[in-house]
Amino acid sequence: MTEKKRGRGDSKSLLVEAALEVIETEGVNAVRLDTILASVGLTKGSLYWHFKDRDDLIRAALQEQMRRVFEKSLIEVSDAIASASNLVEYLARVQSVIADPYNPDEVRQRWRRLELMVAARNDPHLAEVMADIQIHGMSAYTQLMADAQARGILRSELDPAAVALAINSMAVGANVLISLMGEDAPKRESWFELMAFLITALAPPNSLPKD
Image (cartoon, rainbow, N blue to C red):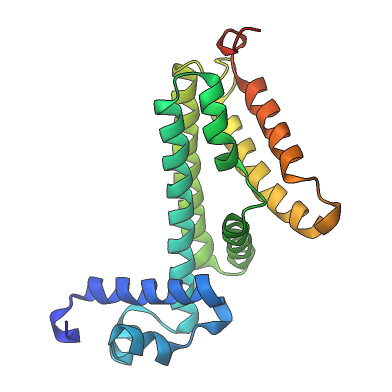
C-alpha cells in the first residue's frame, strides 16, 4: 500500500505501532525516526503531520502501551469474575493478574508506566492524557469490583473504588520494591501465598470452601 492510498488515521497508527515495537524490544533510546519511517514506508511529511517531533511520537506510543496494559488486565480480571464457579477457581486465576512482580514482561510494563507518570509531572499535555487513561482504567476496575460483589466474590461492605485502588497500588509498589531488593526480595511462592491470603480476606465468609 502506497502512502497516497493510506488514510491519515492509518499512517498515524502505523507510526505509533512501529515506535511501540521498538520501545518494547529495544527501549525508548532506540527509537530513530528514519528507521521508523523506513519500516512503515512513510515520509517525514506524514510523520510531522501527526507529531511535532520524536518525543511527541514516543509519548503517543507510551500512551498506547499503557492503554493496552490496562485493557489486558481488565479483560483477564473480568473473565475470572465472570467464569469462575467458586472462590478457589477465581483465586487461582486472578492472583497473578493482580500483581506478578516476578514476570519480566509485566515488570517492564509497570516500570514504563511509572516512568510515564514521572514524565507527566513536567509535561502538562502528557499529564492530561495520563490522567484520562488512569481515570478510565480505575473506573473500569471499580466496576469490576462491583461485579465481583454482585457474584459474591467480594465482601459487600467494601468500597469497590477503594479495592480497585489498593490492587493497582499494590501492583506498582511491589514492582518497584521487589526489583530494588534483588536477592533479598521474598520468593515468588511466598508472594503468591500472601496474594491468596489477601484475596481470600476480601471474600465473604460464606463463599469460602468448607473444611
